[in-house]
Length: 320
Ligand code: DON
Image (tube, rainbow, N blue to C red; front, side):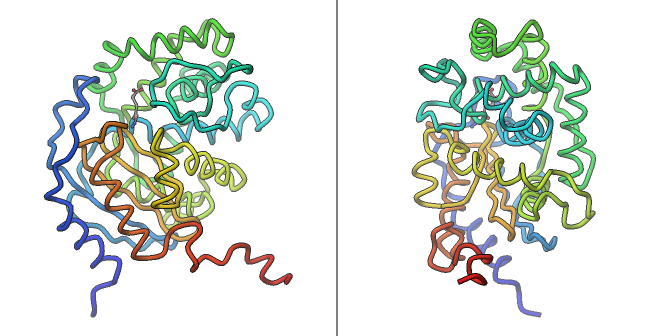
């Protein structure tokens, strides 16, 4: 049988970019500095559950910021948009993921993908469910991945010990009444969610669950509310790659989220989840190889939201 075009593509892109050594492995969380800089995986899972992958699809790494859209989705499900919107906006900040700033006028974090917004969202969940909120997140991500995920305790402790900038952000949020006296415990949950271990394969499966309207294509589990999936993808589209989000939307054109340990998760709505892992980061904290692989996949398969192959609303197509 002929090799599938997507399998050929992931193998070719792996071969093409394994020699790219631009960027640096993150060390500001000391434990992340132990990552093998050569680790490199590419996985694609379709909304029907077909898998195409190459390199190191099974090498574990911590999710870091890739956990942020999922806590945001859970908060939307739990509290609804109106309440969540009183705590965090949906505007790209144009600033770094760890910037210490709030939106002028509203004094809310710009969006839930940067640290200040993500800590606020986690604090909302923590205020309602206490320590159980973390287990709920882990259960959701496990259901999306289709296997039980766990936490890298060494990475968690490493960030808990050294995350003074996030601690400063949490105290700024405390000052503006966005988090309350649970700040320190919510911050611990935030560090713990960032330390959830995934593989490239898991991430692509999680992406396929989003692409498949919140339902894991292999297990059939309904993991995320379909209405919230739309908003998770929208915020990933506008804010998921931090101060590279505009250029990403321009060059790749699909919702995505990066993490400082080297993962990138991209979603082609109703079609595929794409994940890459390579820990060398560009100056904005995005995986250097991951970006190039996604640019090439988008160009080759017409993934961009505004590619001429995408014809818009199928509803309107019937109506017109
Ligand atoms: O809060 C932090 O700094 C990390 N735990 C997560 C940041 C992150 O992943 C940014 N991503 N590119």
